[in-house]
Image (tube, rainbow, N blue to C red):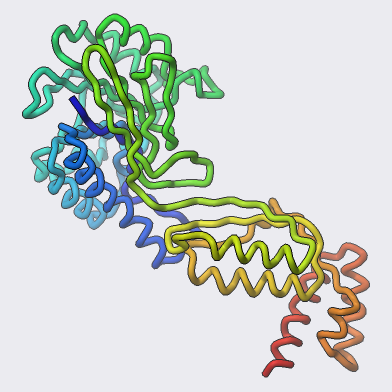
Length: 375
């Protein structure tokens, strides 16, 4: 029996640093991932899909986002089980209880901890631990396990959301999932597979081979490893095989470059040019080193120029330590005279003394002088 394990769709997610056009594409990519998951289910013979929490970014989303999500869910070729997570809990404003979701007959929202038979599949059931608030104050997965009898002849897939204690730095949080308790449930037959959500990177947990985080199907942040995937799970009572499948195509990159020469600036440009899909790539870059004004101007112009091609390309000011110091060649290239040259010399002296404002002023004066010379 095969199914697809996914989580953390977070439909409706936005990123403040994305311009409106890129933000719209980023939002649409999350809707498109639903269609891709359906195609993967058909291609690999998966009988159903489980979403281990955080289907939506929050319970307060626009009707347009909900409408687009429902339209995509209605077109799924297999049943899909949705678990409320910390982003979209079953509280008084639960979006997972929206009437529109009832239009998608193959959608099953897990509102309690009762096992649900998979439609059209004999002997397979799904059970989940839904979040009813953003701070449940207890280990919901342990509560679910305690409520279960052995599955007997059925295969049982459990869905939980949250961090396991083996990976959570603050393991004293009451909602942290006790890994040992989950592994015991797998050994005694109460569970056959535990699908986890909340961690946005594909991660195998423990040593059973039957507890996994699927990661996010579309990348969401710079801290993730192995995003843009879902898991194809092949399982029976004796074995469990898990295979990552590519879903999304967005990339978050946070490189660091040493900059001390024209060659270093050129090397950074070559790196930008080598990125295959800039319209779906978000870059925040940091620099360290020392450049003269000419090379600093080249770098600034390059960032401005390439920013038009990328979803986002920005400099990480807090993590950069790039000094810009004017040299004799800069002064000759600027070709200033009179008051402008005297100002240049004053700013240069202040910049060498460590005045950041003077450095910025020198860079601006250099760039303006070069534009004037070329016009």
